[in-house]
Length: 269
Image (cartoon, rainbow, N blue to C red; front, side, top):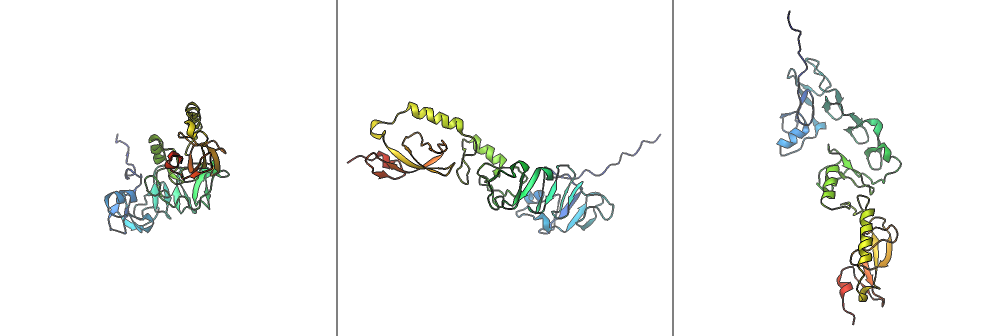
C-alpha cells in the first residue's frame, strides 16, 4: 500500500520572522527575508514600506507586494499587513495601529493609542499615565537606538520617558536608579531613603556645621525645600526623597554659598 503524501508548505523564514516570501530591496536590488536581515548585512537601512516586489518562497515567482502568490497561490504569512509590508507565520497577536503607522504585537484589546504621546500604551495606563508629546519618536536615552519601531519592549517609568526594557534592567544592575532624561527615580526608593535616614541619624555633623542649611530642588517631586545641611544627603521636605540637588548653602550668620562643596568648607573670617 502506497504511503500517503506528507508534502507540507515550505519552511521559510529567518531568525526574525517566519514567512514564505522574501523582499526585493529597492535600495540595493538584493533579496532578503526581512529588513533586519538586510540591515545586518548592508551599510544602509531598508524602509520596508518602500518595498514594491516580493519573491515567492515556493515557486520563486517575482511579483508585486500582495498577500498570496499570483502563480502558486501560497499565502505568504498568516498575519499580513500590506500597509507595513509585513508577513508573519507566528501568532503574536499582531495588529496594525493607524496612529502609530506600524504594526504592534500583544493584541489590540490590550492597548490604546494615546494621541499626545503618539504611541500605543497598555490599557491599564489609559487614565493614569504622564503624557509627553511624541515620546516614542526619539531614541532610547541609553543605547540611542530607535524606540518607536523597535522589536525590544520598552519600559515606561512614572516620569513618562521611554527606554528599552533591557536598557532599564542594565541601568539598575549598574546601580543607576534615575531616568537618563529627567533624573527622576525609576523605581520605589523608599528603603534606600530609610537607609539614608539611619545613616544621617548616626552621623552628626561637626559642631561648626551643625546649623548650616541648604536650599534644594527635588528631582522626584520638583519642589524646593530649605533643609538642614548634611554631607550624606539632603532630604526633600515634601516627598522625603534624597534624589535632590543643592542650589545654595546658608550659614547660620546668613552668608550664602554656592552649590559646590567649597562654599561649605570655606573658612570663617
